[in-house]
Length: 167
Image (tube, rainbow, N blue to C red):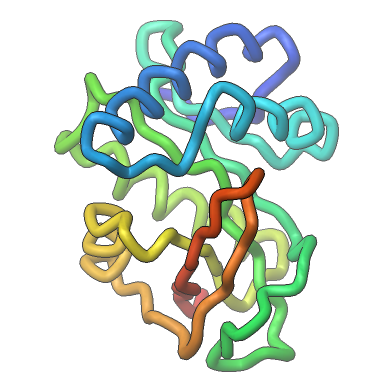
């Protein structure tokens, strides 16, 4: 397996990967992604050199983006609001590779890279009804911040919790 920055040539494969992840989430009634998002964010992530992919046998099996905060998080109260936070976005693992340690490996790599970039915390937002993701982050030592963020995603109101880990 190898972790690397994504390139524009990865876009078709990323589309297929995240379409399969979206189908899996939808089958579990976790309807947070669609045919537009997260795909629409990938070109900008690539341009900013913030999108990482994990390959096995030349196949992309997981990806995540590490970004600076881009929007107000409303009612989320971080442990140290003034500390530099790097944010984990668009984190996904191929349904074919679930429960094989790939998610934990990628999370630890995201933490390592965020720390190398000067981050003091790795932070993320997770929809309140995405209980598998919440359990996963808590199992990996992430702390739930106080409050929540309400986001209107094309007419769908999402309530998101903030999770963070000190790097």
